[in-house]
Image 1 (spheres, helix red, strand yellow):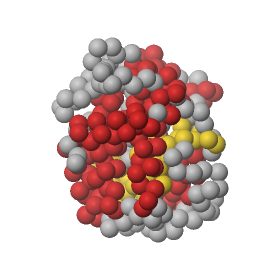
Image 2: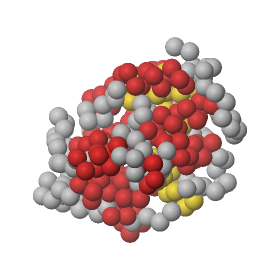
Image 3: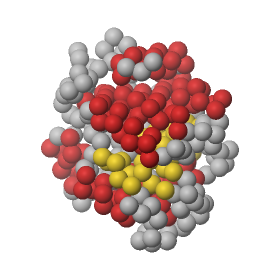
Image 4: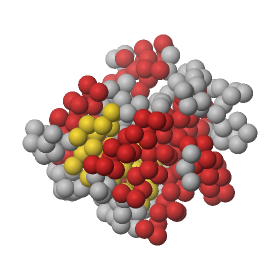
Length: 289
């Protein structure tokens, strides 16, 4: 498949990231798709990762990229995805960990983990570690978090919400885990010249609410979404900015951003011991050295 985005209309093509390899997960719809299209317009070579084969192929065709299909609710598929990306790309310049979900009910995956925790945290943690040797000086890892991290709370004794499941708090906790993962990653990869950042995209009109229950799903589909929600393109803006702006021009590794500005984080996000513990626990859970 061609990797020249010939059918992508020009739209503010500067700054250019011509020829750089960009992996975007959750890219079959929403802000992932919008970011992939915007980055292709700036000259990137896209690896479009999604759960739906049809939608992922459509975005790959629009961007001139290559489609990779994986369901993050299955860690075996995440491992397979890592192998496929490693086989196809000797170097990855930007890894955008964007895939995620919100689930109103507690569900357990075939791997034995709470679904939201696995898809939002364990899967991107595993994929990033599988691809680290494909990243080098100047590479960036961008993780989609959320302002919901402010209501998150990590309980080391009940990390997978087996005893108490409040859907929005569980989602917020996984987004807090994204911030902790991103900051700990920044510390670990700094000697290699790699950057790691997290960001809040805003509340975006997308398919995100499809597992949030009837009320949430109806709101996401109602005309009110045009009043209270951002377009996918607006939601992708900070991701595209973090992927293209030179470091030091408004952002630095280890930060958490919203609307292209450094943003507040939950108290636990400032606990380096907790970040280190979460990394070690996650590595053990997914079977990494």
